[in-house]
Amino acid sequence: MKTQFKTLVITAAVIFMPAASFAATMKADISGLVCAFCAQSLEKVFMKQPEVEEIKVDLDSKLVTIIFKEGQVISTERANALITDAGYAAQNFRIEE
Image 1: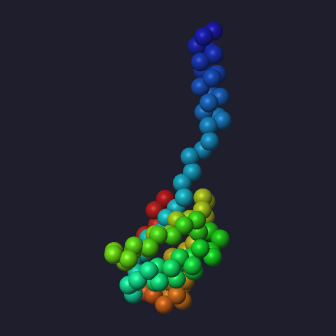
Image 2: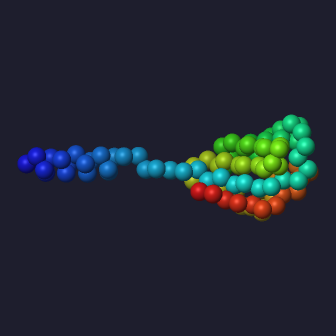
Image 3: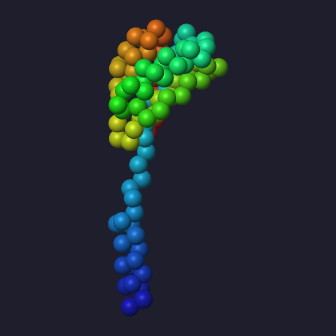
């Protein structure tokens, strides 16, 4: 009887355990990033996108990391277009989940 109860409790815990969910991130190397104003312009552009949760711009490494909302992502083509429209050039797009 104790074994059945343990099994029931464990099964219930697994069933009602929230599913692990991960937000995808996209990274890209950006040429032309030289100052905080550059970073702010990219932040402004990407934070208008409904799929974007957060953006991090590292001026030292010229790296942009875009963190998407759970279950959402934009294409590298769209990200590249947004970056290009903001006046920068991107390369080496990488998506991590």
